[in-house]
Image (cartoon, rainbow, N blue to C red; front, side, top):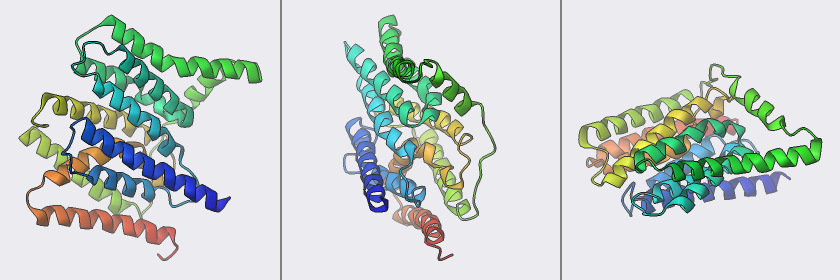
Length: 274
């Protein structure tokens, strides 16, 4: 029913925002009193959830976020095979809910290169974790439809239909100010460093790679309100961390007002007011 869909959608968005902030704080990406990553996640999610449906990407994010947590958690651990297996499993399961997330799989390998010295066991365990959900799905397809390789057709269809993104005029302002804030944050990181700790720096490198691969998903979704949705996990953390580090409150408040202004236009359009 309509009411149940709204409740489920709200729960998924709130849970995703909690996971984002938990990841950002626990893995020392941002300060322990900064809740802006959760705020930005909520705004990004609601900007694309004006319809009464549960977006698959938002559900898949609930598995991508634990995968990132386990990957980052392996840093400086003597024995991290379990962390890599869990990271692979969660990232693989995320593709069940949004098949486009298969393009993000290489991020786990990039994270392994960034965080750890080469160890063939860790690479093998991570790949086994990524492929385990696929193996289960292939088995289910074989038992249910006698077509074990249907999933590969879905993967090919999902990744071979790249087209120019559709952008509604009501989203232009919101997308523009988001890109502008991201450019400011990237300039800030390049000029002043990616963090005071090595772990923080490495984690932000991983988030940037995640953003690069998530940006490819924008070309798979032919909906005007899906332009930013594939990128909300890295964008929320990076922008939230940057805004919290701005010393001049007037600049931070101005950027937030512009950001919320773009969001208000989207929602007024969704309500049929404009």
